[in-house]
Amino acid sequence: MSVNRRFFVIGNWKMNVNQARIQEIVKRMKNSSLNPSTEVVVGCPSCYLSYARQQLPFHIGVAAQNCYKVSYGNVSGEISPAMIQDCGCDWVILGHPERRTIFCESDQFIREKVAHAQLAGMKVVACVCENLEDRQAQRTEEVLFAQMKALAGSISDWSRVVVAFEALWASGTGVLATPAEVQEVLSKLRLWLRENVSQQVANTTRIIYAGSVSSANCQELARLLDLDGFLVGSAALKQDIVDIINARGSQVTESQVSRLERVSHTMM
Ligand code: PGA
Image 1: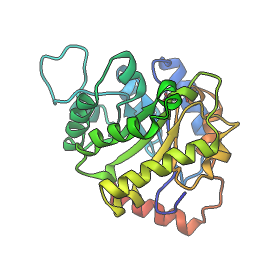
Image 2: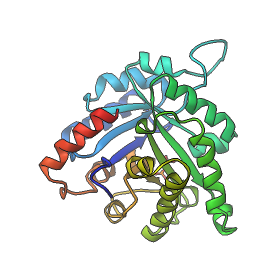
Image 3: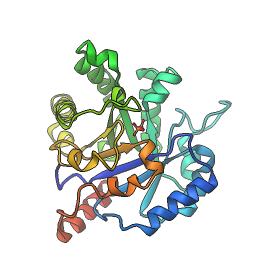
């Protein structure tokens, strides 16, 4: 937790919305009081990017859930950063665990996509993940650091990147990661940034957590020293998202908020 890193919540709708569902979620977000010190983004299916952008207030960002590594061409079924921007959106999620597992996306491929997205001026939520076998075999550092290394090689502007750590073993499994387990991994990722990129990048890059975040566990997690927000899946479709956006409470003062807004404007 740091006032230099604006709390960041991205609700990833995955493949679970249509126009009617988007309208419902937008209505809920518009009718709720959302902590203005939290930066809020939604991860939207590509066919609804323009629709979501039109429905949502401007201060809520819209992210594509994936993109390809070139601007245009004969690549059926893919979309490019240029197309996402043409839909009025400036964020993209890359390396999501579902892309890594279901579509077998390699570190190298994700690295190329992150590099192109950065070059195109997109803001990127770059995901790293750990599965149950890795955790049981105590390979957490090895697998996460390998993914970080691949990502870092493609990042030219860290101020436009949010790193998301997903504990796959705690996503939809009924097993919850404890705050101590989450803090341990996030602090290792920050240390990795310090030792392999720079002190400044380690201090300013937002590192967020994913893995069954809900109304029930968000407040306790939000107090963790190295946690700067959440990537939220199933709870993003429910009322929970409001609690998660507000999980940091109102301990940030008004002057800190305006400072955060200034910092995030100069960063983005
Ligand atoms: P979950 O999903 O919050 O449902 O665990 C997170 C994600 O995979 O984006």
